[in-house]
Amino acid sequence: MAFNINEFKTRGLVYGGARPTLFQVNLSAPGLVRNVPALQKLQFTCSAAELPGAQLGVINVNYFGRQVKLAGDRTFDPWTITVLNDEDFKVRAMFEAWNNSLNSFVSNIRNRGYQQNENNYKGSLDVTQFNKEGQAIRRYQIVGAIPETVEPITLSWEEPNQIERFRVRFAYDYWLPVGETAGEIGRAHV
Image (tube, rainbow, N blue to C red):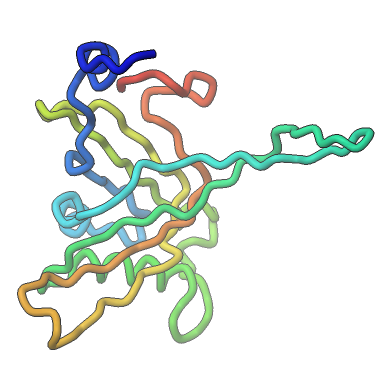
């Protein structure tokens, strides 16, 4: 095939390509740590995220000196966001409280409010990709999430003209594109 710029323009990036800066993250936190002002603020201070990936395990079966590859179990790697920290510390305090409620910093116990149902301490997150006109073109829901790590904030005299940032890494049960079931994954738009 010979290079043809016109064919690329009509068959490749027809819409001009998706932009990584056009996204928003929303969190639905469990009731014990739900802080509406912090949740609303997260929509504006989450400065980096990722669309989730999928990983399928492979089972190798040997047969007469050859390996046959069979589909194995699905695993979900942790999902991470980066948050800009404001002087009110609302968003960071919410994540610290949630993490602490799962296993107390001092007493090594879970908050009693979670005793009735283990799913009470899990939340869900949505990450939405927008097009250049501001319309949602793809949305993923991260289901059964817990903040496994609230990373430290670096303080340094060597970092002038910066805003503090911290990362939160979530363990979660699974993700799905919103508007699709597991058997329908692959449509282009929500």
